Image (cartoon, rainbow, N blue to C red; front, side, top):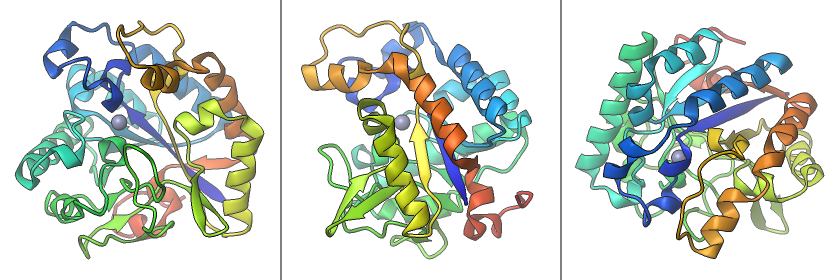
Length: 285
Ligand SMILES: [Zn+2]
């Protein structure tokens, strides 16, 4: 079974957990690490023959257009992570629409292919703002991968469907939730992020195998370029929880990803999900 590999392309200083410590005005003065990290990720994917979907932050794409074109030329799907990396919960519908229209147009202008996928920063579409789906459909997107059907302190919609479904906020949009495993009536995260970095690899593998084998469904996995970069500058003043979640096991991430790429078959979202592919002009896998 093919699973969907996804990368949320933001740099280390753009993560939502750093919002209280850095303003958007500071971004221009931060040393970007994204180009070198993307080069490593492209090499990793190439070595295992995997393809992936890259949810690109507009702010970075504008500054590194050649990087976006390079990702696209390597056979990967270009999708949108918005322009400014504001959580959807922090925006009005009007502000959200401006942000997602801007990012989509920018990405399409840079690489000359249609962009129809979106992932909300910090999975910030949930029970209080399902209007986000309608806005995305109006902005020309076909799918969203913005709901994490778990309980978490910053995000989550534990009672959302666990697998691909028509978005609750718009009939024109498909929602592709990040992978969870269900155990005794509760959902647990299985689709990457800090959990993958902090917990032993065998546990992640077991959970993904369960989704493929028991649920008979493809997985959607995600990670960030800064997670493979132990050499990134350290942000001062972080509280313990943020520091722990951001910096633990950065040095082990790359070898874990190598195992993950070896143990499962990975492709881009528009190849793995026929619901998305039938909307798009993407070549079928
Ligand atoms: Zn993000």
